[in-house]
Image (cartoon, rainbow, N blue to C red; front, side, top):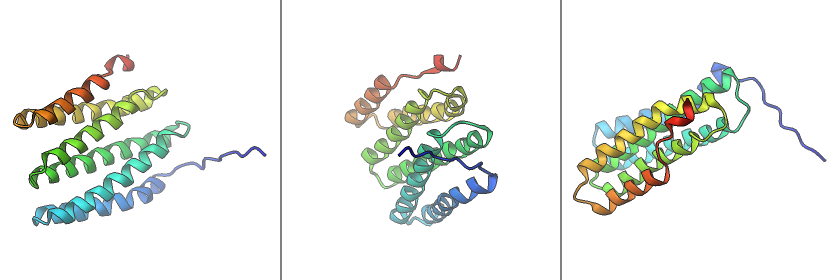
Length: 168
């Protein structure tokens, strides 16, 4: 038996509802970070990153239309914000290895999306891809005492070179 998947039209309320757990986790993480409760902040940012990445995967695998494009735009930004907040938390916690892991993860995930077959998706990803690249370079310049982290970043950038030419 063949099963078909129906995609109901997305509304702005649907993406708002889908991102509500992310928004709550980011808010709680920011409050915890501001008060120095770094473990709590880390936990909230981890939830937010996971939520956004799950939505990003879902929206990037359905047929593209205007609503999906808007939703993807929000999901990409949400993923980057949560992941960079998580990396910043690990930096403050003096855990550069974990900060590097999250920075690399964000950049790698967006690098994969730069290969998406839809031009609209690649265009949405590009700005955020530049941001994660910048954050990796900034981190590398501050982590010069950690050559293994620099090597990890260099390997990631070699494996996922900047793909601006895909957007022409």
